[in-house]
Length: 415
Image (tube, rainbow, N blue to C red; front, side, top):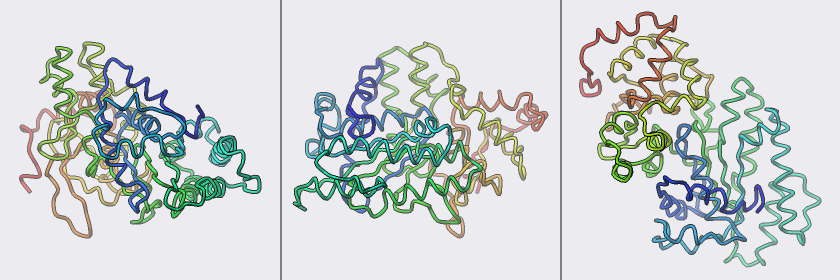
């Protein structure tokens, strides 16, 4: 198996071999509907340890050409879809883990883009030795040449490339102050993907939504789904209530305690989502605790609440006490440096998974504002807030302040 072109099914097979596995393969049926349509660009962002890489590996296993992964999928949910066989192992699939490319290049964006261009191009040349691409230096020219010449000239059977991009936003997170490098990276993605006939499907995943410049997205061809607006992909962000109930029944775990610790990511009154990594860890270790500090976003929480801008401290006190606060998410620039108001900080915490939108709490705003009530979703995250603010000089007396508050108030109902 290649590393980038048609990487196959081995990584996904490891997930299926795990003791605890939840079948989310019906996501593929939704993606299949968008192949080779104007909706073929899809970006789904969610917090760390919410299964992004597992999903990316699943898509690679399903779409990768020159392999047969049917033995993995025949007994999964996707096998019941009418589109299952039509798209199974039918596409040249390019898998890009941006974090690995950035780390390999020692955080040098120019070197990262050069490596990405050359390594993938090399694998394509090995796969298609009869197609001469030696005159091309850019990956997009190579892809277009292969697309045009490898389909026998029959427009009816042409199949483009499927792109699976994991950790797409790592540059925005790790090179936060490098505006030139970030722009160069986003421009590279635009040229590689936008309006290219060789793209059959482009699926990106990361923590942050796509970077905005003003009110516009830098990659505006993508349909975005995030923790503030997951749309039809909401049930694939984490473990659903029914899935957790089944796990608790299988492993004899108290479902109410599981709910207290890891529930709280809800997008309507009926859909409750749990942190999948924490649920699995709690079952494996037979202990309810916070497993959140094993992710790098722990330090992000400390750093961003320390900004303490325009009353942010008071909002944090209310949240720790179990209350809700109102957040306008519309003006967030989808990065980790452009903070103009406390709304920007609180919106970032939603995308990092530290806050969650209260179901059906959207309020009417002006100028396309998106105003929601938010809360700390569960005991796991509340514990992280307490740990970080306990001895923090920016939050003196936070516990006495939170204890002095009355019982939790549903702010959106008052408004």
